[in-house]
Image: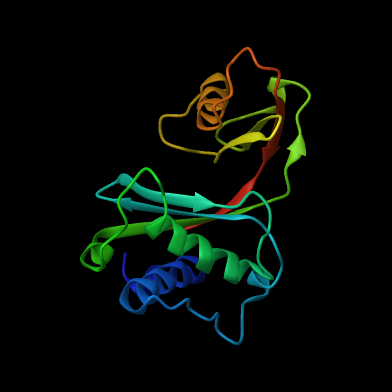
Length: 173
């Protein structure tokens, strides 16, 4: 995908990653932000290389003054701090694809029939441990599998009593 075809959100994430990898500086958001980037929300930045996950870091709720800064910080973290992967090298940048998910506020789930892995992401919570799985992920076709993965990510055993939350995202490519 060319830079002209990328969404503003993805372009911002990639420019932040490029700036950080080249100079270790955190990109300042542009002065005039689109309205949808002025509010606050959690956001995830996912990086893929040849269709395989290369990094994914995000926040369930806002940690920055606006969504633009949330994307900048999470983009840098996805490229440099995802513990599952080595940090991205500058030479890899042309090989990466990126998506940005802006999270809507989570809502409690009383019954698993309220979930749909194509529409809703899921958060599982047991004590201080929380696991999150974004919606509409390749290979995640059932609610049970979605919950199982989220539990595994948080080291929550299937027999532990956990709370469930669902959320929607706006995904940008």
